[in-house]
Image 1 (cartoon, one colour):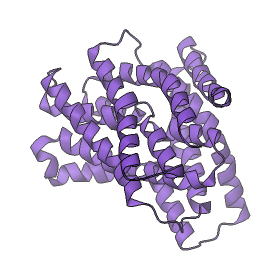
Image 2 (cartoon, helix red, strand yellow; image 1 turned 180 degrees about the vertical axis):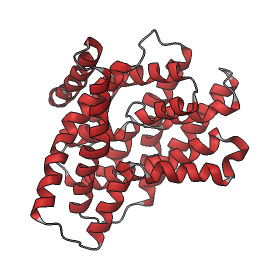
Image 3 (cartoon, one colour; image 1 turned 90 degrees about the vertical axis):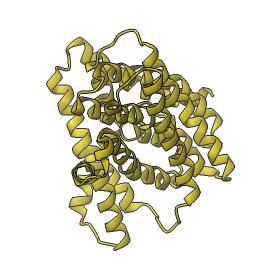
Amino acid sequence: MGSILLTFLPIITIVLIGYLFSRSGLFTENVGVGLVQFVYWLAIPAMLFLHMFQTNISESIPLTFLLSFYVPSICVFLVGMIVFNRVFGWDAKELGVAGIVSSYGNLALLGLPILLAVTNDQDALLPALVLLATQSTILFTLTIVALNGLKGLEKNAFREVFYRLATNPIVLALILGLAFNMFQIPLNVGILYTLNILGDAAPGCALVALGASLGTYELRKPGKEVLFFVLLRNFAHPLLVWGVALFFGLDGAWLTVAVLFAAMPVGINAFVFAESYGIRQSTVSVTLVVSTLISTATIPILLYLLPL
């Protein structure tokens, strides 16, 4: 456990530095936004493209891996919608945000840097890349359909899904990396060197950017809604994934990545949906901060228990 904490502590320290710089004004709002944009549009896509390009994908992806992650994810999404409607009185038009806050984890800014820090197992890269490529595809679609209600099956809703995915640099980088890998398209030394420089900056900058982003959100005492979101996101989701994975006999890197990524705190894209639709932004912003703080305790425990 001590070695895991020693590995995890620098990760939390870097996030905290970004947060303190943002809160103290050393990072102005423009600097924080710029750092997030650099990470989101350049550094992480470069890193993911290289990983997908260089990863051995001859190994088949177990269907049980996808079922172990997404059956619980969809269940948590639906439970979030039902509870926030029946218990907290959210309107039907708000329930898509309740679903994505409950089920969408911060895989890119936090999940992948943590995985790269705690394991040198190259076998863990493929399941991580699979979830990075599919989480947005599945949960964005559910969210947009839910936010559009009965109109969710109309062309406008699916046009929005396509637009969000087609303009998502993480999804595009993984698709391009997969294409270059499968068709064995060579890259010259100059391009590889450029991508390596950008990709090497991704983990550290992503953690600072996460902290800077958290520093821009309102920080206040969490209410019952926030606490229930945290219960679903930080506790119910990883435990459900672990249970389903064990039921299917999943083990090794596939099990570790599924449970670890399910334990990630609320992803920033959940707030993007809340902001875009003007739905409960204050509650979602506080949930982001509290969920991330809670994950600093839950993730090291999971890392200790999981096979690394």
